[in-house]
Image 1: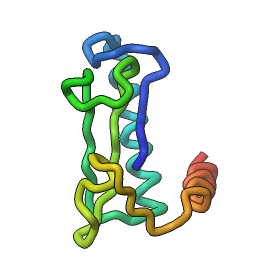
Image 2: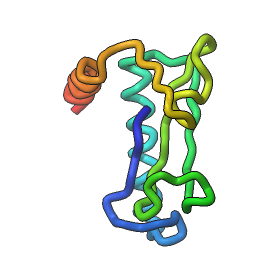
Image 3: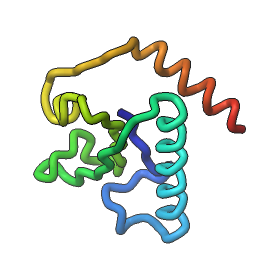
Image 4: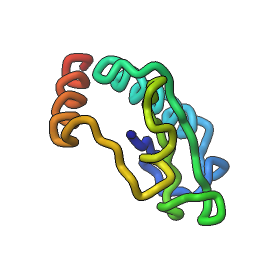
Length: 105
């Protein structure tokens, strides 16, 4: 999955200015379009975990998780447990995402 984060270092969405919040949402949509193009998922889980109690692994910098999903996938295993189900090499996926992004620009 991908994470989208604001450039400005904040812990919560309420600390962002309106324009920064809008930029964050645009970045999220761009990440989704890129994943659509490269992986063709059937759906997504998109979420924000704030604070340790909220499940945030990185508590000091707001970030949004975007998890591509398929009807036959393993649900939240790669998100909430130590088990990672990877159907392709991460290096190859990064190359594919970079190629797709450069074609858009």
